[in-house]
Image (tube, rainbow, N blue to C red):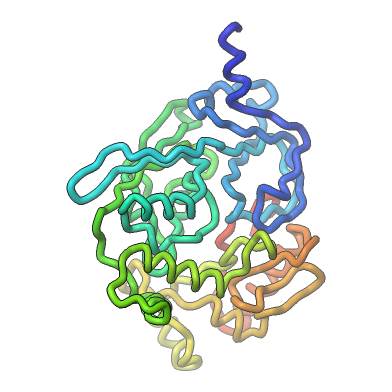
Length: 352
């Protein structure tokens, strides 16, 4: 085993590790084992370790889209490969590869600093590059799948490295193949196709007004990013200060006839286009606020005063307490509006 020595520095395995710093709700839970992997080429090897093989495995990025409701059995895997590489430069775009452990906002800012556009509306979304395709992150009228060339992953079912082109990833609104087969693919890198010049999207939720207030007349991609950052900072609490996972509930997608009935009763309810013309997205935040939850607090579990979609941990709330609050909110929206709303974060150690 002479070649095993370099491998040891490429990963670390810790017993009974606290996950408090590895989830943005700052819920204090522990993992039976925590595996941090720097060299992803060793993934098949570390998965075969006797402590890891045949036991539960959970991949955590920045833990910005999870609610951990209980201690985690088995192994929590954290990818620590944080390289960004420009693979090829073309006349109108550049192909960029980002390791799974790359900070998402860091990647957005890197792309802008390198004269690339497309990701500016996705600035300040917490999380990692490897997690971005799983829920097809989106904000302010843009989804990441528009720019994904391919996803590199270890396929646990086939025991093989795979490269999935965008079409194979089955992207939808906050949805993908990886969400439907959560334990099959371990994403190790993403490949993005980023345009040098791109039609800016400023028609969504106050971006144009924000840039006007900033005195920007001829916006470039970086101006859009700055506007998005300013809006997000105003609306969303900083998870380092107040534990949260961003928007906790998805906007429900409803058939047109149901939307018409809602609008007759509640003409002010915000309605947005959906992927299918036969459906519309309805604002979950508006319904939650109409039920009186904005700024609500029960012990250390609460709803942000700035945004009704955001559940917050004021200090020592458990995952169970936050989940209980989410269920109460959902039940009240269902009772008042007849519309079921579902959580966006992945629930660990509980079912919805």
